[in-house]
Image (cartoon, rainbow, N blue to C red):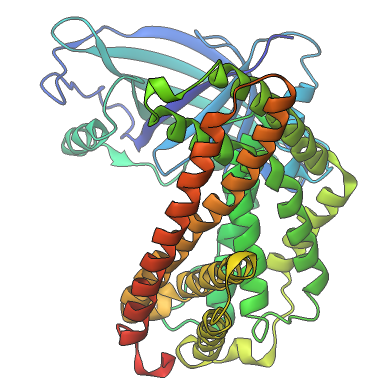
Length: 505
């Protein structure tokens, strides 16, 4: 079967009064022509688990016949108006989801079987909207839909809706222009994110509404749900080998683990200890792939700044070979981590965590009072880590500063978790903590970078490379590290001066 292709959809859906005409959009967002409608008959079967795991994650999976893009479509949410669509052509068993798509949603299905859940027939009337030079700006479709869903409470439904989809080359902001024009024409925004969600309705529970005065448990659980969702979205990106997806997955993993540890008095720390350990292990398995990305990008940028006369031999070709091997090994480890039973158990544990969390008695207390102490503890640990650097030099200092960086990251994550409660009060403190973390992150890059350069020098010498340039970059990194330590000192003094609520002192 052909490799999946990917497109980005930017669209909005609208309700329209039965019997009304299709709005004319000439003069809106640069539109000068609105073509007569082209009719398409679309027949789509939708797949999900029996418990609607994909729909709960905002994902749509269908097999559609008819139209210009017939095939298997996997739609992943990006934002309110934007979705990534993975496409595969028709072929194979029409009643079985292709293995490539099943694997892409493994973090959502968790081993449950994908089965047909709904069937939609759409009589679509498509209007192309173009500018004065004939370039497509958007497509307005008038959809007449008949849908049926089986299982308990099987039913048939019919409705009409408008869909406004931007051409990939059109600026996203144009959606608002069309939105206003369609509202003026009598159309109203659809409350449903997709036709499928409209059809299956309340079979998929809506996310819990935020309370006006949240408890400590409400705030921490909202943070955990957000990071779990980010981890699963990043999982799809890693499987598709999307740039930066490994990094995003590591960030989500770290934030989940940090939240569990920092707010262990809210979500029982003892009962989540095993999960936190598994999250740490996952992060370690993803580390080689991410470290290779960062190392290569950083070293190539450094090499670009070296005068040509000081670059001896085919160093760039040598780096390409070296990092290609490292990247392949890192990706192999990352994919092995994502395809094992242990990872599936971790995902199930996360699911259990957010659906039936082991909350403590403190979780029922008002967030404003109960969440102060965990943030205070994170701040104290950061101060103790910095104090431990006093009098250290060399590798001991580098190791201690790396620990300060990790504690700063945890303190920043704590501030992010309680943002709904203390957002404005912690804004400046969080900003100062982030500055410290960023500087020490750059410092750690010089530490790791020097290790890589040392390895490249030895390996390159063995292959007959002139490694003078690597030695020069090594020395520059050592100087850069000293400068960053001075910057950290200034930032730390700024962090200690204020810009935080009194209870955090």
